[in-house]
Length: 279
Image (cartoon, rainbow, N blue to C red; front, top):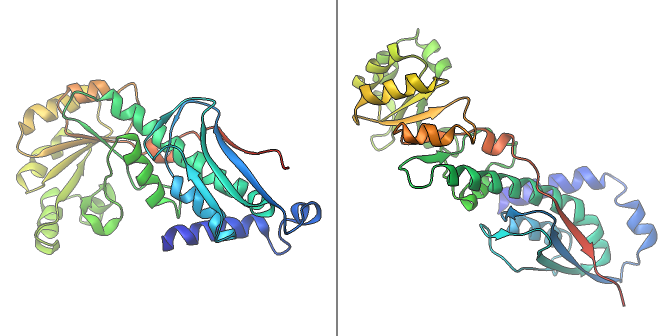
């Protein structure tokens, strides 16, 4: 909650500046109360309800936000998703910030749902990455789960993942990188290593990796890597992954496919906050 409040406060500060909402202050009495409804204008997967509500509650502790659907719900265009009751000033000041967050998070959840559906019925899991907007990692990963996909590492402390630049730092020696990782990492922490060619594969598997990440490999090379690994370690694929490619990768027998696009390229969904007529 502290991280969420920091994000919201930063976003509100960006919007309000030093002078505040000069339009609302000029037009709306401080004592005026109001109610608004949150409307989904396209089919989407809902996520980020708590963050949406929290925006208004940061402005007015007694603001009441009632969602009709939980995170993860599929809602159709034209659906009233929630209602907000607060001072009119709170509704008008918080509207854009609340929608900016919610639209982004719902977009991630909706794309994650499409990705999860693409591999349904297989052992393959679609994972997110750390390619998230600064300050929005927790919300982004919540949205991925709401859509039915799964989380990779939250941060750098959550597991050993030896990538190409780590290998470069140890002279490109796969076996040496794994030896150092095994010697220094906590015993229960999994060790994963990225390989970009079949030539690196056997050193990765025999060197003690728990997971081998096949990065930017063509489907034929992925199939060959899965054949050579023969179940000795788990297999993840990343790089160049699209919704259209997911069924092919799942059919090749990989365990995981990581998609940076889930969090860095999801389209903001169309929602609006509509003030109800005032008595």
